[in-house]
Image (cartoon, rainbow, N blue to C red; front, side, top):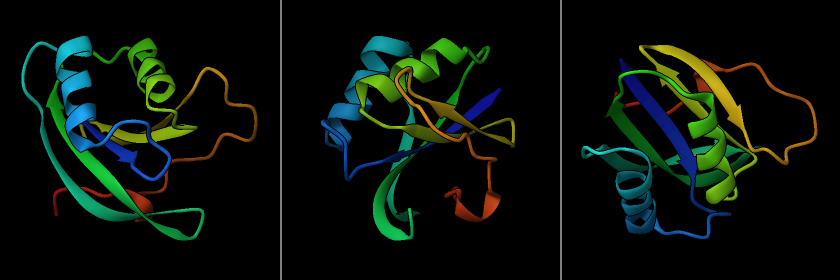
Length: 107
């Protein structure tokens, strides 16, 4: 399965190298493919890290851990082309439906 992530960089305690290192070291045992692109959050431009990773299975707890560690309210993702949104464990509020319009991919 292919997991794609969009991780905002404006409110992130880690820079791109720190995020990639964290993901490679803590969560997965093989390299990830990534690039930085300009995305949008709440109507404002935001530099966004786009990540692609081959994963054996999707674990919701891993996505919550990524949100928590990188201080993100939510992270948009695709798993085998199907979109979703993972939320941090402390998120309180409305949960939004995945919107393809705002997801950044390799195209």
